[in-house]
Length: 337
Picture 1 (cartoon, rainbow, N blue to C red):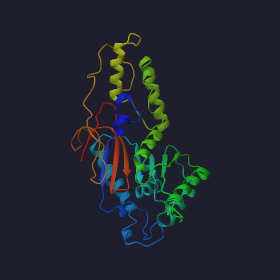
Picture 2 (cartoon, one colour):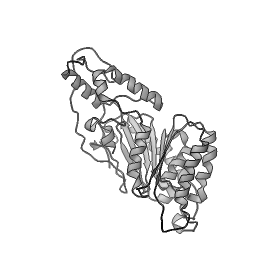
Picture 3 (tube, rainbow, N blue to C red):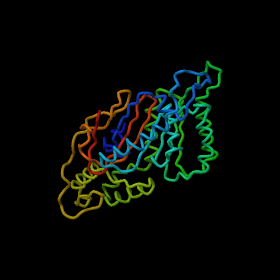
């Protein structure tokens, strides 16, 4: 998904290039729930939830250990997106409530807002009325978890619907908010399509009209300046895009034969940027139970190539977190496991 959208496959630069870092955990219920309770979504007590309520400790790990380690080990920028599904979905919303400034965008996929008698849902109206969340983004996805053969109230489905209603009626925070319902997807099938739609929402307008830029390279600078202004952080043209535009420009008589610099400005002289295609991109996306870190290419190890990029921490419903990290101009995607 990230490779298709952000690395220039078929000329596509719809999102920045990203690094994926996975964090396996040993107790999903402990780490991905905001409070301690034994009650499930039907109100019945279950010993499965005995260790619940560890969100605060998990957030301390993210802010006090993981993110500083990533920033110290790799050249990074401070744009982060937190993604979660199911219990990970309520972890994402609770992170927005409790460690607001840690991430710039939050993606909550079919979140378990029924948890502990809807404790996070009950905080939503006050939070989104009183907090200033300008520059932040929140995307919420809802799967079709309705059972036509069950006449009992579906608290999971109802809680998400109510959250969206609160946002529509009471949100005064300035946050960019989007909600999508997926009638043809279940709780288990919804994460992939929702992650795609979330990324396109967060990076709306990031994709540049390449044909127009080929004819007018100066438009490249203006485009990424507008993107940066809208996102509140600096974004630059991908290095591969600059190389591609330079190569095309040298072959077209209607385009001035001058290369583009790192920021997309024209630079004097006939010398082209080095290379034409760059390293290969064979690789796969990480995540899942094994806690793989996904990206493209070489292993990502301390002491390896230092890079500059943005991070996305992702908490799926499995016992794994992932970080998508977008390298800046002139770097290559890497992977680790």
